Image (tube, rainbow, N blue to C red; front, side, top):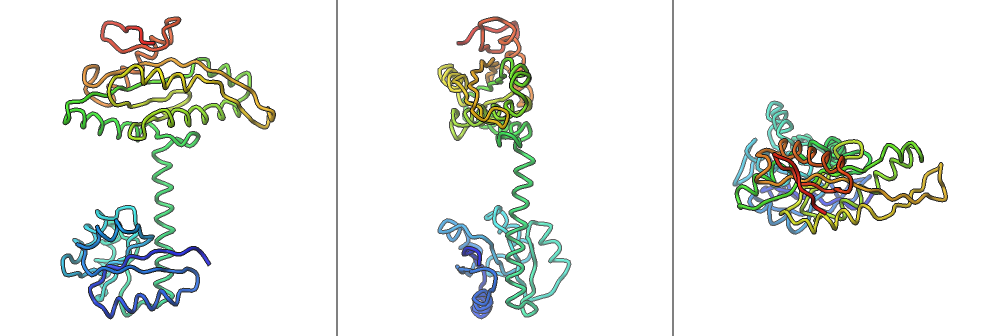
Length: 308
């Protein structure tokens, strides 16, 4: 039998709540613990007390009903699978509830213990698969870092916050110098291990509230609060420390040390949009890469200037 699943029931009818508890006590494949509130307005406090594995909501509550209830419940618990319970069979409302994000729609009186258990198990599994798909769509498969799409979303939000709060941020475009040579010498498996370790170090080097992303190949981007070059220098030091690569071709491990080139763009100042900031940071990185000994460069419309 699997681990205990927490069910949060939002139901104003005491008798229906008793029936749900009785059904779940009869479950054969899972164990369930049920917490219960009688109004949608009590849902936020219940969610703070414990995060449920599934949410069971009556379609008609004292403070919300119908599709309004479904929408409100999805806003409050968007990451929790929702199953709608109703005393009236209405296939059109059921379909609309699922279009709004509910995982299933059960009619009281037509549902027995086995069907309720099945609906909960399937709802949890479907939600888990949706999370996996959403994560894969927004993250790099090799490093687990945000990909370009998620980076742009976060960068847009970050620039909007800077406008609102009159603050600044830095976009750092990071390229691993000579990465193709590493692939050629040690093999693609070693290259993949290096990229994975590089991405992990980058994620650890930035603040959890900031963003580190891989946008393709050996190119990475950070979105950093403020414009402190000391922070950027610390990140570079972390990335350029030696790596030990273990692969089937090199089971004893090979030590590799890399050098990075970094292009920097500032907001506000260098571009007005997220896409524009990436373009100019890339341009600055190219200048840093081409000029021997430069390593880091800020974007400027008429050139760049040395950093570290």
